[in-house]
Structures are given as structure tokens and as C-alpha cells.
Image 1 (cartoon, rainbow, N blue to C red):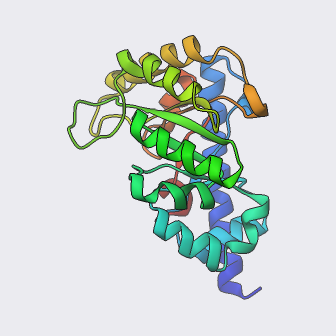
Image 2 (image 1 turned 30 degrees about the horizontal axis):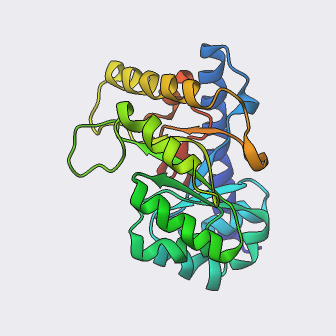
Length: 241
């Protein structure tokens, strides 16, 4: 391996070690077992060689992309395609109905179901592919009009509709915290999401053997999310810095 690659690999692994240490501290503060928390590496802006270095080192097992077309170019045709058998790939962006078929074909999980309409499209294409697609329902944790998701009060209603679709396996909730929120505001929205998650997903896993996830927290707020009970923080910039 060239010296530059060795240096970059060392930097990436150092970043990962720091993130894991911070997750462990957050778990300790909340009295949680850090082994219950899984890291979702957000690779949407990461250089493919960086992702490959971590994959080759066995350092990441779960990744997330927010654009179907970009994911296809990287994970089905590019130099990351060979890693698909050892990695769980999650779609974490806003999914349009005309991209549902490709998303079902490319991804292992879809973490951003925010309406009955998109759920029905994913269900239809999953059925055509002969698969059961594990999904998360996206909660709207901000008043921003540009933010997708279902309100906390309506989450149970959408979950019930998704549960009735035979080719979907709803396995938890995902949420994006309000931009610029204070620490106390973050604690409040994360706690509200955890309450809904505990109500609707009281077990660690569910039907078809898929684990139940509360996916909260990104590079700037994952410690507070983990303290609140998140078990699938989505971290990109802190990992690939």
C-alpha cells in the first residue's frame, strides 16, 4: 500500500476510534451498553477510496446514501460494488416515487418512509423483486417546511398503514434534528422521538429477524442522540474529515 494510503487509512481509523469513544462515553452517561449502538457511516460526500479503505479494514458494516443515482454509480458499478456483500446499505434521503424501484433494487434498507404513497410504491416494487424490505419511518422533528417526515402525532397511523403492506417490514423511526437547535432543544426532540419509538417498537427486533432502530443523531449531535436512546446514529463528516 502506498505511503499516502497508509497515512489516510490511519487518519480514518483514528476518526472512527474517536467517534466510538464518544459513543461509549454517551452510553456510560445514560447507563447504556455501547454494544447496542451501531454506526451508520454516511458516505454520500465521502471519497470512494476513503470508504474502500475502511471497508477493507473491516471497520464499517453499515453505510448510508441519500441519492439513488449516486448510490447506483458507486455501489453497483464503481469500485465499491464488490463490498456490497459485506455491507448493509441504507437509503437515508427523501425518496421520490419515480426512484422507488431503483431504491428497492440497490438498497438493503430504506430509512425515510414519510407517507403512505411512498410506502405503497416501495411495497409494490419489493413485491415485484420477491423481497421484504425493512424500512424506517421518518419523523418530522422540526417546523421547517423543507424537512420531510411525519409528525409525532401521526406516526402511529402511518406505522399501522405500513404494517399492513406485505412486502415491508417497518423496523423503527428515523429523524433529523432542527438545524441550529440548542442542546436542550435537541434533548427535547430526541426524547420525544424515543418515547414514540418505545411505544411502537418495544422489542429489540421484530418480524423477519430485522433489528429495531431509532436512527437519530449526526456528526454534530450524535452524543446527545445516543444519550437519549438512539441506536443507529448517522455520521459522515466526523468520520471522513
